[in-house]
Picture 1 (cartoon, rainbow, N blue to C red):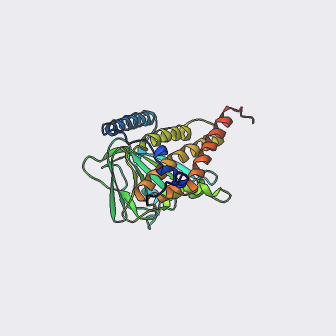
Picture 2 (picture 1 turned 45 degrees about the vertical axis):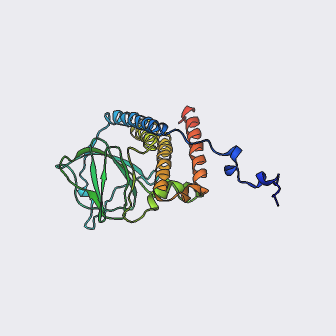
Picture 3 (picture 1 turned 90 degrees about the vertical axis):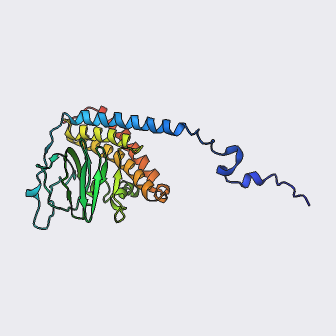
Length: 277
C-alpha cells in the first residue's frame, strides 16, 4: 500500500529542519578566508587604538615586593565603595618582581608591546601581545623571565562584589563565570586572533579613558563598570566556546546582555545631565 502524505506533517517538523525555513546554504569556500581577514583587520585597528591611547598613560616598574607578605599574599588596597583597580606596569628582565604571589581579588592581565609568560601553579602560560589572561588568583602565580622579556602590561583587579553582590540580580553572576568556571591545566585566554578580541580592545580603551580620565567620580566609576561588563561579556562568550556550548543557553546570559544594555543607556542619560552640588 502506498502511504498517503499527511498534510499536517510539516507543522510537526521543527522550524530549523523544515526545508522551506532552513538556514541559508553555507558560504562559498572563499568567503571564510575573507571573513577571517576582515576580523583580523578589525582586531588590528582596535588594538592600534588601544596602544595609541596607552601611549599617553604612565606605566610604572613592576615592583610589588613591598606588598607581599611571607606567604606571598599580595595586599592591594581597594576602595570599599569601588573595589576596582587598574595598574599599568612596565616589565623587563631587569625590572620585575619574580616572587610568586596570590590574592583574593580577581585579575586579568594583557601584555601590549611584546610577549609575556605567567606561571600559575605548575603551568606556564605564554601570552602574545594583545592576549588577555584570566589569572587563577588563588594559585601562586608570577611573571617568568625569558630572553627578550620587555613589554608594558595592563593588570585589572577587582573584588567579586564589584560585579555581583548582595541585592544584585541573579543574571549579573554571568559576568563572573570566566573567573570561576575554570578547569585544571586549561587557562582562560582570549587570544589576539579571536573574533572577540576587537570588541574587548575597544571596551578596554573606553575603560582606561574613564578610569584615568578627569571625570566626576560617580559618573567615571559607573562608566568603568559598563566598559568592564562589556569586556567581561566577550570573555564569557570566548570561555564558553573553549569549554562547552551549554552555558550560552543558560538564562543568565541573555539577561546579562540586557542588563549591560540598560547600563549603557542609563549612563549616557546621566552623562548628559548637569551635575549639581
